[in-house]
Amino acid sequence: MCNNSLEIGHDFEDRMNEVAVRFAQAADGAPYVVYAILDPTKTDPKKRYQALPFYVGETKNPHGRAIDHIRRALAQKDKYQSAKSEIYRLILANQLPRFIVLERCSTRAQSLEAELRWSQQLLKWNYSLSNCLPGQSRIISKLHYQRLIANRLWKLTMAEAHAAGITITELCPSGCYRKVVELSACAASESSGRKLASLKETIAACSGCQSEPTIVIAEQNGSQTSWKRPSHSTIHLPRLRSPHRR
Ligand SMILES: [Zn+2]
Image 1 (cartoon, rainbow, N blue to C red):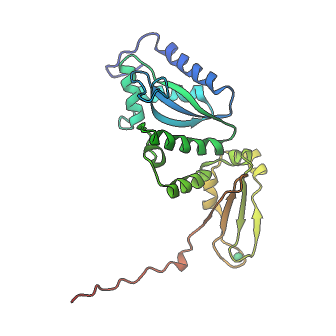
Image 2: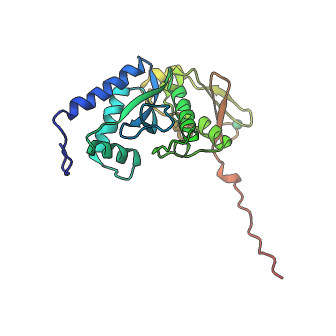
Image 3: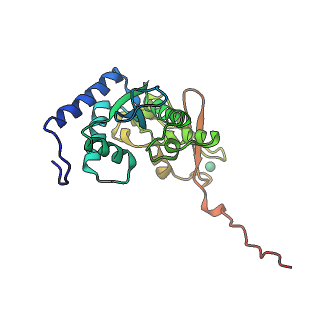
């Protein structure tokens, strides 16, 4: 199974499957969950969890995600990705990571928000996380947090955005037109897996005034984020001034 010196017990597959099944049961049928991976060889000094948490993630498929984490660690394709190294170290010690559910969510928009919120919470509780993204590996400012929360919406697919009741409006900043993107149609079509970020590439300049259009994404709770393609013709680089020397 593996071409390195790691010896895997014959019951490894069963144990791995057991861990994944337990995780899926804890999800209790929720469409999405935010989870933490625990290291069973280390105790939680704060006694909040059964063992020490070292990673926070979100998934709609807990069973598959748990298996994936373990298999990827085993394959060691990226030794320097620290969550994989942590899991690999556990496997070497004949242990497996544990997966616990931190929060059950009904949409991906919610689970991405909860993933960031939980990561920050655990970091503030002084746990160190081996996640790579800045919002999940270190404590960030309130402003940075809000920006990441807004930016997460671009990661959603058309279908996920539709499920979260999100509204997308495309408009000309000069007021020539304003149209709502038909997410229900997109979600039902072959473009349902397209990420909202792809709208930034396909959107065309206003046919009336040639202005670069704006995309506004609004969530059901009223919060919104907008994006406008930088128009190259109006970028003026500041002229360099020679420093005053005396
Ligand atoms: Zn226009």
